[in-house]
Image 1 (cartoon, one colour):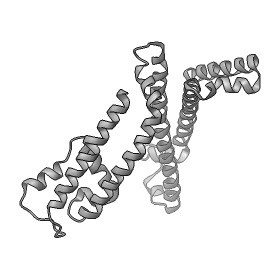
Image 2 (cartoon, rainbow, N blue to C red; image 1 turned 30 degrees about the vertical axis):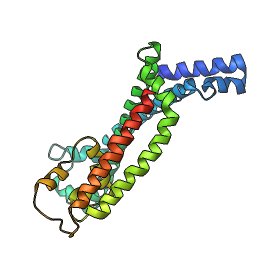
Image 3 (cartoon, helix red, strand yellow; image 1 turned 30 degrees about the horizontal axis):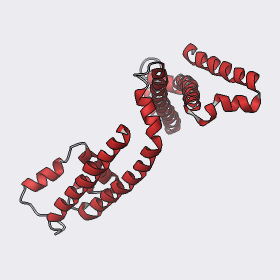
Length: 243
């Protein structure tokens, strides 16, 4: 709780100081850094505060739900809790099922909140790196390259989805790796990481495609994909970052 209260007090102090020194409008603009990096880091701080409070609230809610009499009786079966005869009662079983599903839902929400909280802590580390010129090299590079990276991402996404969709259409009935579109996207991404065992196994085997499609189409798709996406697009990404 103290780890959450401290950033709340710090952000409120910084925000109120800006309002007192520069007025309402200029103080708000100053807090958000006039659209610059300072405003982005303040947004990360607020996000971390929201996630921290959310974790606490969700943990308390999960604790209260686990401590409900229905759950405690179920956990204590045979030890002074719910008897086996009561477990066979349809009404009690329905209530128990509803309660367990509610607990499971709260647990899933808590897991998501904790995961997002870890992300916010990771982003705060990048803010702390700003205190050292060498450590802030990565964050400054990403900030300056952000517009070019955004445009590159749009072009890359269009080409990547096009190849993944064409792979699903052509080979969906022959390779389990392309059997549906999400799996086809996963296969295409794994190819970029060097995992293309499906293609290696196909090239060294003498089996034909069950759909009757010539095997040369598989070679053409793979070589075209690796040339355009891996050799050209990813090297362009490297050039953008190095520039």
